[in-house]
Length: 178
Ligand code: PRP
Ligand code: ADE
Image 1: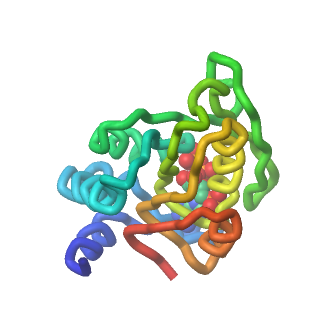
Image 2: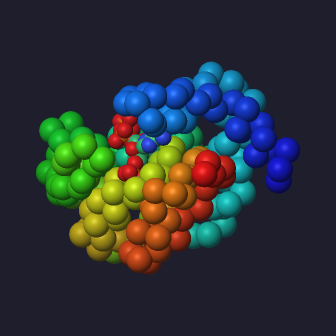
């Protein structure tokens, strides 16, 4: 509801011109510092995603870990990290993706998911959707089912929702900034 959304908005501080001029940086570190707001965030994600048959939460490095891991624990399902290159110790699949400035790679453990898994993707923020598109491709390469991605924040002007919908991923976010 609106009061709860306002609590989250109040807890997320905005830093103008970070990391570059013109960007309004929505800083979740101030939310994490506030235990009531952090608990409310996880509780709202639990309400959205409990009893839906998910078997795993996948979170993307780094900020996706901060919300994906506590949500997985609350849902009593496993957490699978998607990481930047060279960080995962077992055999991995890699996926290149484009950022606002250049390219990067994300990786997943090849044995982390099977065809029997129904995956929920979690990240802190949806901007262009590039991170979640790459994550979706990695999950589907392992044969697992994925059709939902949850975020604390979405920036609808950047087109991420449309990009995910085109991939048959339904995005959901607790708060939106125009
Ligand atoms: C940020 C954020 C999302 C992504 C959103 O992560 O945490 O994962 O960007 O942008 P997109 O929708 O345009 O892909 P970043 O790559 O800055 O890494 P970090 O989590 O390690 O800070
Ligand atoms: N990642 C991409 N755009 C962002 C923004 N405006 N604030 C925080 N993280 C972001």
